[in-house]
Image (spheres, rainbow over the protein chains, first blue to last red):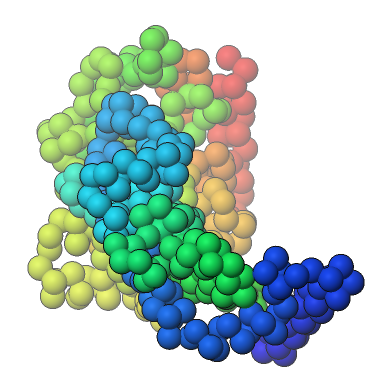
Length: 263
Length: 257
């Protein structure tokens, strides 16, 4: 507990130091506020425009969460299918890599053309960009089961379904979480980037990415910083929620999820 | 110990096994194991000891020859066989109790029978107090006990063991050897055991089969006539030491040959 307090104090110290450097840079180089606002101005912008900031935050959070949940569901289903045979994997796995390497910025306009601007388009972009790590990690977990464990199940005349659901799937849960952790970060990035293109069907109202673009066009640099801050907080919260779920489902049995005290 | 019935429980006739393109692992193996025997297979690496267990269990088919277990094919006889692997092979996400009940669960046994049998075998191996623990909380010896309990829960007539105690320290290994014999006394299964340890083989077996490598074949058969029940004290007796010395000698021959 004491260790944890020290860690928090250290992190807070670094934060204060960064703010101080920021402020110093402003004083020394006499940067105009529309180029770089002071930390104080950003804080004021957060307070003054809190309702619209919260609204943008909620929109982006919903889009990212929708995309992420969809990619978890679809990703696990695809991985279950991939786990059925080496042949299926050989044939389809290259397309998973393709999914990961396709530049999302490049296909965003296409998605806009297909389903129009707005929340659904952004969630779809978040989904596409976060799908590959879920598929790859879950498949890895499903197929990397110890041969003797499979033999053990075979000795009891286990069915294919029993081997899949009582052996492979629980064995894959830690890898699934590795996938979800990666996916959660890029789902938020995907949503914010997607909003730059497909942010809103109404002028002046949209998620964080859209509002960032809008604020920059209006030279409201202090609010722009507030929005970037909000996007960071969003990414962090996703990460922590996933970490908690991972700890909650694995801490009783999995080595990686042991309490930090035992390390 | 056994009144040697006419029909052997395990029957290998001219069994050959090769993997892939022609790597011959076992060559023309004939093997009869009677009900109630405790047979240990011992031999240098590459002599096909583990392959014999896989053939008996039907996990791998022979390339040539026939195998009969109680007159059935290995796959049909599986319900009567339990396999104990070198590692404890427990499912880390299940408690000890749920691990021990796995076999009955997969065989879709009624839940009250499952509960009763699981509790009984846990007590048999002395794990009733850690039934709700997860495998990572157990020592190596306790994990192996859980693995044995799981194997016994399905009430096997034949127990196959592939170096089950190889990873344990000598004390735990000796203790588990003694317990294994006690369990056998109570439950009367037949055992086929693979090990690298001559002393372990002598202590447990009614018969030791020494295999020679490349390709695997029977080099010698050593009957072990030490009386049952065998206890820790047996290890200090001169007959035991003489048998260990003799078996070691035969094993060296198999290696040189």
